[in-house]
Image (cartoon, rainbow, N blue to C red; front, side, top):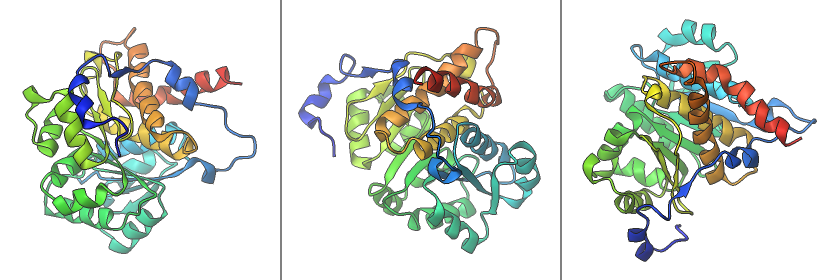
Length: 299
């Protein structure tokens, strides 16, 4: 439930949006306890990547691994197996067309990412339904890419996700499909009302990405830029969010999402000082060093 009432929503067009600063990273990215094992840092399940778009789910899985997740399983088309193991040998493979294996993987996961490269055909919708129907309230579910489009006209799935810890990560066109609000009319007040109806967090990706939370007013990024306008950026973001939720689960989850989104853009901004375009794999390659910097400051 929102703890700011609907009468105040119309005033949230600018001044009342929380501007994210780098201090959010110091609150979330902390040193790991000495007595730790992989089970302490979350089991992430990424689901997507049909035979044409395997790269999307591989980037999401790789970002989750490099972002510190304890375990990462990737449910994807079997044609992506060789590429997955070549690029992310730390990730476990699941054939998402095997119903038993997929459902078992869903039940074991702490955080589920679904949508990167999944596609929008009948087979993709079947997988999406199977996953959502087998989730439970304690799990985080990050809905991205084609899964957002598929869910747009599936009211029963939206109802289930409204009773989960769901995070939608749409770009503006995907948000138009999910919310019914045209891009030109996507004001803060209208977005909040729709986000309240969905009862999930919404990370609206755009210049100055805005995060609409379930319990607090929106957060907004003032970093990032056109050097991030490359395919796979959103897929990488989902993996970072998943990794942060899996390992920093003892923190406020809304702040965890804020920190993950900030991390994604902060690394991009840093790299842009010497690169015309920042690629998703560039960000993934910098994650470990970037997180170490902030964890070491807290020692």
